[in-house]
Each structure stands twice: as structure tokens, then as C-alpha cells.
Amino acid sequence: MTLAPVEIEAIYQRRYAGFRRAVRALTGDDQLAHDAVQEGFAQALRKRGQFRAGSPEAWIWRIVLRKASDLRRGEHRLVPAAIEREISSEQDPELADAIRKLPPRRRLVVFLRYYADLPYAEIARLCGISEGTVGAALAAAHADLADSLASEEVDA
Image (cartoon, rainbow, N blue to C red; front, side):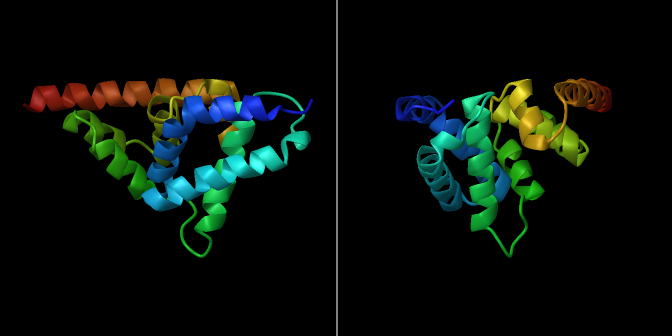
């Protein structure tokens, strides 16, 4: 199954901001995020004949994240602190603090779900885990966040 250029263009038009925001949070660099998204979509257009099945958006996410990693070669591949900076820019400082306290995998899954707005299937493909594991990680994160936020209310 070959993707048509118009399908890739539609994903780009609809999701560019989410791609750039996610890559910026993962790399800590706005220009690198822009470059990775642009080059990732360009590569997706060139290699659209290699797409076989599944979600075209998840396939493009893998390309974009790989491109971001390539552009940062020699540095940390994904910068957890950058995720924390993105989360810290949110309006709710208590929630941002609670998210920063999550274990790294849960923090990444929460970020991809709620900040990058990805569905479970795409998160699973990107992280190399099952959809059930995504659901379990989110459920555990929700419980951790509820506990953390409840304890902050008691302390206040």
C-alpha cells in the first residue's frame, strides 16, 4: 500500500504543530524540532512506497523521531529535562510538578498522549510496547498524579 502525497500533506497540515511541539519537548530545541519535522515529512514523501500497513501518522512519527535523533547525534537522544520544561510551561504548576515526579516511561507516555495528542496505538508503536502497556502506564500515571495532587491539597 503506497501512501499518496496528498495523504502525507493532509497529516502535515493537520498535525504539524503537534509534531513540532512534541519533538521540541523531547529534544529541548525549537529549531531542531522544526528541522526534524520538515525533514521527516520530506523523507516520508520520498519513501512513501515503503509504507506497508497500519497508521500512516504513526509511520511518519517514527520517521520524524528518528530524524530528530539523527540531528542530535553525539548528544542525548531524548532529553527528559526538555519534557519537564514543556510541562512546566503549562498553567497548573501543581500538576506540572506532579508530572515531573512520574517515572520516566510514565512521564513519556503521559506526554505523548496529552501533549502530543497521540492515540494509544501510535504511542505503542513509537515506544515499542503494546497498547495494553500504554493503557496500564497511563492508569498508573493517573493514580500517581491523583495521589500526588491529593497530598498537595492536604499539605496546603
